[in-house]
Image (cartoon, rainbow, N blue to C red):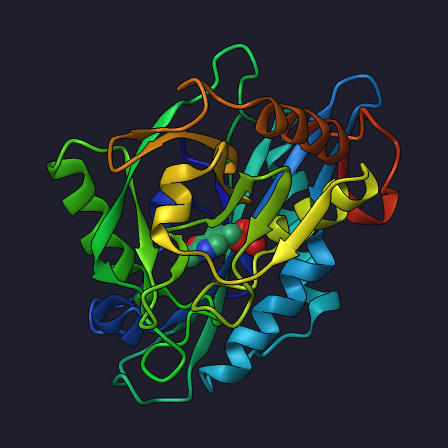
Length: 306
Ligand SMILES: Cc1ncc(COP(=O)(O)O)c(C=O)c1O
């Protein structure tokens, strides 16, 4: 087992020796807020770049505020702890960093105390452009959680149980992944990623008040696509529009840009990852890794080769 150093309650410890109480609210009820932050290694520069770190830290604060799970730390401290743990592991490869504020100790689900932090970096390669995924999606019969039940705007551990129901049902039914509809019957997002479709030459994505996480990658794609001269529209999407679209992809820090080639068996385009999807993915990876020096404000150096 890979046994990286992780940051837990102010100390760097091996993952295999990092424990929480079995009766803690995080273990019992998923009482935690977290971020998944990708860092991209640039071999030529000998630098590791966290992508849109400040936006991730701000969203962690937003989630913590909404859930009334107060953070003992401010973003500046979190950034410094993250650099400490990444450098202690001397990662010279692409990584993903899980940063989690969690209900520690032995309280119950409504406790607002004993909030602890862990930061766990792990190796994770970027999407291989020579081996693109070609995903078959279905519209889930499970409905996306909504702002008046379990707000998707907050990135809370317990939210992912909604994704679990849909994901496992999709796999059981022979698909790769689900696409959720919201309470209004319109397209929301995937189980752990936002969604875009290309239809009539326009890139369309559901608005941020349509039961989706306020995704940082979604925002990145809107900026990149507009800067490349594309028309980007934020509006609600019918399920049948997905069936008739030319391209659909999911996006997220983990998913990056993942091409979907069919929805409920309706083949999109020629049944292969579409050209717009591939070109956005190429430009996304060039920017995250600093191969394209533009958008430098989105990259934070978290480690350097010595
Ligand atoms: C439910 C959900 N939607 C969307 C996303 C994409 O968000 P981001 O681009 O900020 O990683 C994620 C991934 O974190 C997610 O879990």
